[in-house]
Image 1 (cartoon, rainbow, N blue to C red):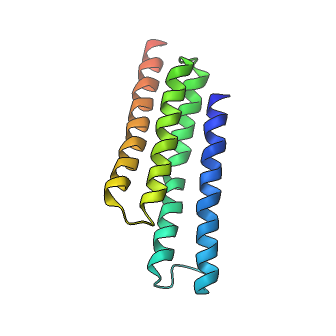
Image 2: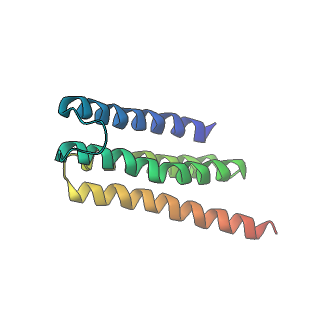
Length: 126
């Protein structure tokens, strides 16, 4: 149920990013691509970037939860992911490189920690 909590919030983030893209497409009358509009290009990348990282992140989080890792570890990883993705989603359209790097660093930290724990758990059970 912990992963479900974070997945719910992250789905809301993806929907919010999608709505931003849709609104900008309507404003600029662009059906496909970005039409050369920088704000639309940034919104598309913020949305796309979230969709590139969230499936693997949520999968590893779910699998670690199913492996009965301590609830505080799952919450720590989920919180790191959620906060990192929120920071990143804010940073891209606002062209804030420092926050974008922070958001990605948090996402990578979650992914790498999750991968390490998953590998360790798998090896330990063989």
